[in-house]
Image (cartoon, rainbow, N blue to C red; front, side, top):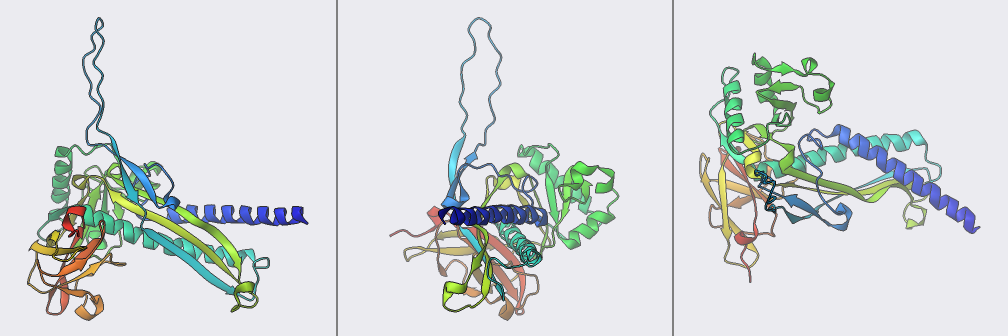
Length: 376
């Protein structure tokens, strides 16, 4: 009897491992902001434990002349490890009625896993994109056209060169549909079909001015492009509970039913703001924050990029504000610049929109730091 139970547990574990691997493979394929292309996975520890450590190094190894008689003085770099809390915890609990966990057809499970992978990838992309935009260096531009977009991209390339961002073929541009249309019309654009399989596997549609070009179906107000390098943004993710079929017969509520369940934990962090650049047209708001009067609060000030003085905000938005979205649909909280106190913790993301004639005209993002929160 004990051996039979052991076998059932073993088979259940093998199913969990196999299903989790399938979901992970499908998820990584569905991601637009892919690992190794937009984010690195350079961290230590397990995301399931709630925190990982990531290496942060702004200086490179020193190279000196070698003295055959006296050797060379040893140097040590400034690499340090920062804690990266894992704050995103997403779950699936898809009920399948009419089947207990031992009798669910494989094709039905496959359908649910396929859908779960797609929806998880969409959510991870949204959260990853928000982290990039929040930490990015903002580039406010005039209207982009097919005639000036190449020049603007070259300007971004120059700024990244001056900031010592590696020009090793891994720089990327995430272009929203409007910007993508302009890039495709530029004679300097090189299609992926002319660049080989190595570029195609990244999800890029081509290259321009040395950047991989990836179409990003993002609708953030006034955003046109986001440029970066994967070395300077980290993603950590794992299953805290593997994908499995859960028999619901003992629930006291469901009879002859089971559920596909699992939990995914993940988070993102930008390591250098100058390596990630967000290009807005006609412009994004520039925000700053200072400690509020009450403990655990911050006050956000709009410094530039606004078209009026009517604002609303959201903390850790699940989706980002869209240009021309109505005030009612945005459903944010009214903000008075420099005065409204917002209850926050370190790492919270504040999205502020500028409202004109009852619609979103501009947007800005800010990540709350420890010094911007009132302590007791």
